[in-house]
Length: 294
Length: 333
Image (cartoon, rainbow over all chains, first blue to last red):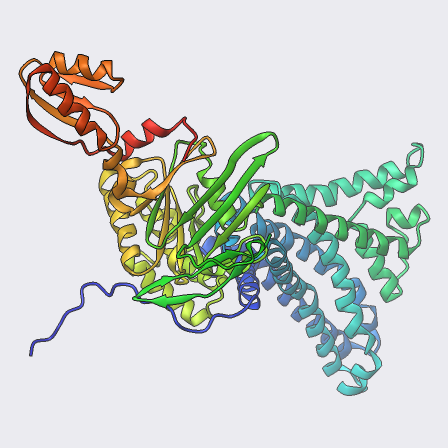
């Protein structure tokens, strides 16, 4: 008997298990996480997201080190160092860059490269697709806020004179305030970048438009709100990037009064309404757009 | 009016789906079709893309042929449940696409005509991802991805980025993603588009092989020779109307009769034309018809009347192109 050589394996039918609708949904989430982080993509796709993640984590280590060093020098010196609420400004700038870089990558290429026609020929609805992308975005971008803050929290607990568990017990509110405030940032930024990514062809252009709208657009809206225009104070609400920061101040009891909406006399709950409204309108807009594309 | 799936039976290696019937008819008529379309109309605003289409497609390899703008892609998108028809009923593999679009899409593979591949992913990753989107577990999806890319001839290149692929390789990736989840039916929209003659032949060979694997195939194209090479059944569309839906083997029965005359062919021509039979003359050879078997009697009688002999007479084999050109524009099935 001679050894056989198979030159053509032919086609083998698949008789294994098929997952229900949750399988495709989970696949979209996994692919979204990979796309944001540049995993299974060319090396240059990994550079920016991983640089920003590294900066966020290193910054958390530096802040813990500062608290340790200050505590070693003199009791009470560490009290003057920035903590949770104040650090949101720092992390929100890193997250803003991260979202500008990765947000458009999450949606725009699928649309511009025509891949949606393949995805939606599978048992996957537009809502499944968009929900999967949203979960991937919230999970990864949220970790930019939450992971360093939690590292700082547990670092401070381990440095505390009162003991680790006592510190945690005394600061339980941090465990919900940090994720809640981060959620506010993520919602309004995600809605804006999502709408832009649903229309703009090049991710770089969407990133520039996103940063321009939030930073320059917010500045212009703030300036106009102080002008003599009729109903000018309402224009302060268009400074979208201010609203999650107002919510942060509200949650952590910080009184800065530096934001246009605050100066125009709006209470913090108005910012909460703006965040919710922008999120709902943005989500509905993106959904409408993708239902037309499907 | 709803659809009911009566039974789904796999037999003889080919997954045949029996059958679909109308509830409104109160009787579930047993059929053997993968696609059942009844009174299908689709409009884009005021433009009628498909007009009152009624057809059935049996198992096997079927060609969907028509000029650009005939409504082929619209029909494919309706079959996938991606477009909702303005009117009519559409059943695929025994499921109503209007009420069970996800079930249909789980059993159907689709290869779009336009570019649909991510440039920054490897072929293996992309095809595995599309398998997961069809419900396969990740490990199985990776395995099926490798097997399918091997099948389409991309085993060596599967870990290269798709952006670096040639047009022919991209078409193969598109085909691989369409079959990776082992569909019962594959819809291929212009699969040989943009390929050179060698690549076209290889793609057509792959499509023929799909049929031999027991996968039912619908190939949409405007290249009639592709259909003749690959298909057993043909659906012709023209301007959104059904021109013909039937087996490819039936064309010669409606073709011309070729006659070689021994003697004065002109007399035979005059006699036939006087009886209203179309005749084309090429020397002593006549192409008579098209028409049915009564053409033979008419030619015999004309030759007898003219007093000439018939050297040779036989049915001319009409090509798909002859058929399409003859029937397109009539708008009648």
